[in-house]
Amino acid sequence: MTTYELGPNTLLQIRPLNMYAESRPAHRHTFFEIVVLQEAAGVHQIDFIEFPLVSNRIYFIGAGQVHTLRATRLQGWQLMFDPAFLDQGEGGADLPSVQALFNSWQQQPFIDLSPDVYPIFSALLGLLQQECERQQPSLPMLYTYLKAFLLNAKRASVASASSTSAPTVQQACLARLLNLVEQHHSTKHHVAFYAQQLELSPKRLNDYTRQALGRSVTQLLHARLLTESKRLLIYSACKIKEISYNLGFQEPAYFSRFFKNKTGKYPEQFRQEWSKPLLPAAMPPSVEVATPK
Image (cartoon, rainbow, N blue to C red):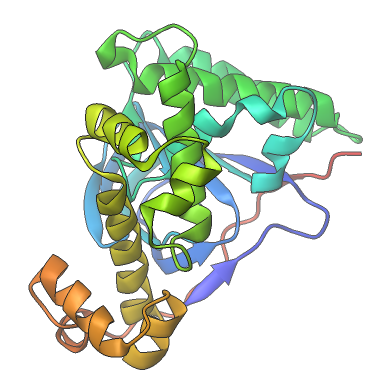
């Protein structure tokens, strides 16, 4: 399976989408990808779950996720950026909550926009593309536009809860937790580690996650481990023993029991049922590249 990277010294790429009969085999990348759909029809599979491609929808694909696309109509925008780009400029540290948009192992990987909201995102994408096309794109300008896009996306994602105010302490804590789980799920399997990092007691942290997400910290960790297990079983040639150790299990037998408990199948069964020949991966179509100075 192919893993794509952005070009050398490139932090952000953007291009408009306007195509029919688009098909992309399973792949992953080291950058964040946002697909903004104005008009669309087809199927988008992300980490073994299929979602319909529909109009006025934004998909968020995190670094390392596996996805594939089968579209009969695709009109909108494709935006790709290095995770390090979120650390640029002043105020970078206040973005962990928007990074949670890319944790689709914990939530649905898209938001649907009302027709009156879509023009806001379209305008910001147009400004990003315009800046990218300059001979010397401005890094602060690109960062400002991207930050505005992500903050508007975060607002849209919580609109159903009528939450338009700044993140509460609890929300900010959960955002940090999700990022910590993303970074350490294969090495840190105990709640105490995450509670210590967040300067909370394990009980308080579990209270936060149960109130906001309906799951304990352990359940969040298990969800992330299960997603990575499936990726490695289907899209790598690693042996079950290697996968178990890579994910921090002391013995392959522990990993097999964990996987069977969560899926009803042993890892070997899951791999056999999902394994199928993959089409040769083609490089993505050319994109407008921004190399900030």
